Amino acid sequence: MDDIYLKIPPERIPWNIESPPDVLVELVESGTIAPCKAVDLGCGSGNYAVYLAGRGFQVTGVDLSPHAIEMARENAMEKGVQCTFLVADVLGDLSGTEGPFFFAYDWELLHHIFPQDRERYMENVERLLAPGSMYLSVCFHEDDPQFGGVGKYRKTPIGTTLYFSSLLELRDLFSPRFSIVDARTIRIPGKSGYHVANYFFMKKE
Image (cartoon, rainbow, N blue to C red; front, side, top):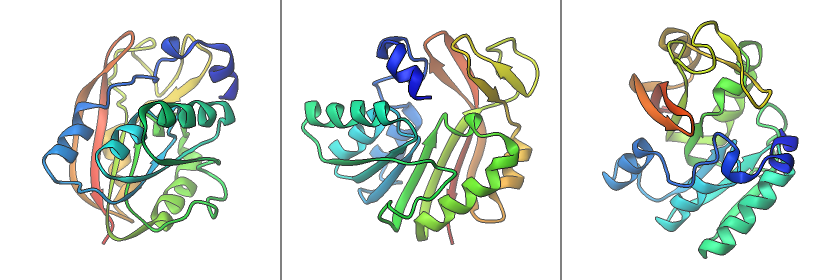
């Protein structure tokens, strides 16, 4: 993943979109998610962490790529906001991430995590969150027309392989640990057209 940030210009990285997604903005502007201690899992260059910090959130961003984290820190500095950005594997040891948090989100991260690793990821998310916290997860749906439009595993033009999920399998993944407040398919913009995505908004009891 670090090679992508090193070798591809930021404007050509498919998920590097500066404007925060509408569904995240709606949660914040409606007051559904109030300013709190939040964690951005797979933060990339930090665009959405910077957005939340500008709205009064205390945000920690985590990403596997050192170069992405360097970009995120520069991004926050340029925008004049305070964020904490850490190089860490969301499937590994996140003990250096100072929780607990009251809002966690992963935007277009879970389709990079294959089914055999998802339980480990869920354990980490659950461990980071305080009781009563909220969790937002958005990833590509199996009906998404991009990258060939068929199959659960699909190769992208930049060489990554993604896993396309159904609502049902994600419900089975999330429901043992979280109460599902809202689960549906949505359309989200990408740099090469719209994607069909799974949207899950949840609460840790």
